[in-house]
Amino acid sequence: MPQLASPVQRSHSRRREGYVVIDGKRVGITEFGSGGRLVILAPSLMLSRRMHEPLALELARRGFHVVCVNNVLAAKREPGDPEDYSAEALGRRMVGLLDAIGGEVAVFGGTSIGASAALEAAVLEPNRTVGVIVEAPLLDRGALRIAPMLTLAHGILSHGQPFFWLARRFAGLLPADSLATRLWWDFLSASRAEQSAMMQGLMLGRIAPPRRERRRISVPVLVLRSRRDPLHATADSDRLATDIPDTQLHDIESPTTLRGNVRMVSPAIVSFLSEAFAAPWVIARTIYTPNIGDAYLN
Image (cartoon, rainbow, N blue to C red; front, top):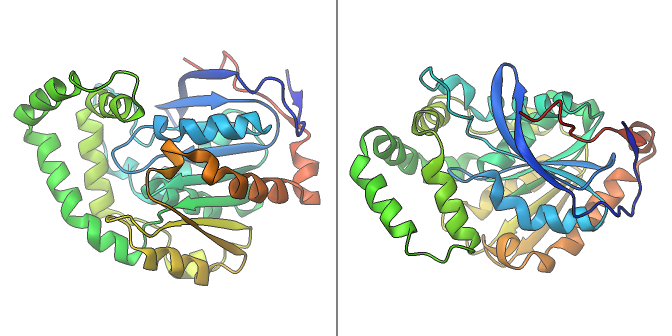
């Protein structure tokens, strides 16, 4: 049953996870909270949706309905398809998730390649995008930095059996309740064929919307810029803030801040979301939004 959206949700502890089918492909998701103020978050390269759980929990406590989605598809019998993993394809899946759960509009967000996917979603569906949150965006400078890493990762995923044996032994020595440990196990448990296809897809496909398309984004955008990130160039954050008219630029301490000390940043994110969802055209389309029900999860 649809539920009335409200700024204060007593169901903030509600947490559900499973898979939804988007264009015939199974995609792992975790849902926090409920209501019409929907936020869809995509993770960084090689990481699972779990990386956004600290932020998702905090936003759910503030009355937002958050769905974290994996970039890497669930394992299937056929080999992974690189065409499933360009930034544009990842953005289409974020929009597909919005359709699958019956949502009208959403804020799309993500980190690194997840940020690229969120921008692609905004380009694809401008009339259904309330706003965009990007952490450590990947544009021209960042793409040059990660290109060697993509090549190396593809080689390891394709032929790295000894690496994965050692990685599992190492993971067994880590604290079991650590977020980093759980992310490490998520990486080791994901389909290597799909992970390898993702590396190929990002090497062969586009890694973010081109500048002419970014300039057409008219909704509010929050850019979270880290000065201590060796993989993502701050120049890309600055360029994005220049390209998109309605952009707020917010500095964060490090790439781990949203994972380990989320309340340092959450006031700025909550303020951004509250303002974005207060737009009259958004209110009219978020009064009723269904939760992800059993029919969607499998």
